[in-house]
Image (cartoon, rainbow, N blue to C red; front, side):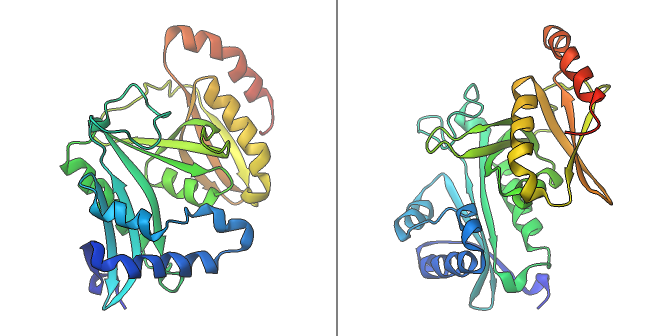
Length: 256
């Protein structure tokens, strides 16, 4: 079945069972140690999302079969939002919160992930949102690599305040502006290695250090030895002076 034959729909309560069935199918397809990558939403969770005026639940149907879904939150200024610890200086009405995109294992490799990412972004822009944010488990490199490939940047690395899980926060400007201002003359290409999942504990610690010292992971390059994550420091006079010794130390190392 070609992608153009799939039907895009803004889901409602009539799609509840299909949402649950798709989530259960995807979770069961994962290894036991990977199942935490996906938030296990209950029927009540889905109902709340489907009935919320500030949440969009999108789905792709192949006939009567739901094969992909994604959730976009557009919080209002008068309500609490998810990830309040991230970009807390921003008004809710400026922010779009991207949640996980799920694709039926039988339909992978057909560009459905990219299509669902694009509909989220288009909807956020149409609603005047200036910046998109998301939070991804550090030990789910496939997802944060995908987000980086779609133009998001790592601007915070740390622990989730709710459960102390190691997480990566990413953001993307939707209004064409660059934030934060980066010193593009200084870069550090961090080799992620071929077996990224095995390297996650080491990578997380070093990514957390770089982030805390004012560096932003801006992009990826792909090489025969695996991906390199490109970092740049924030371009601020005081910050740049403070970061120079760290930068020189990193450059002196062969790899992180």
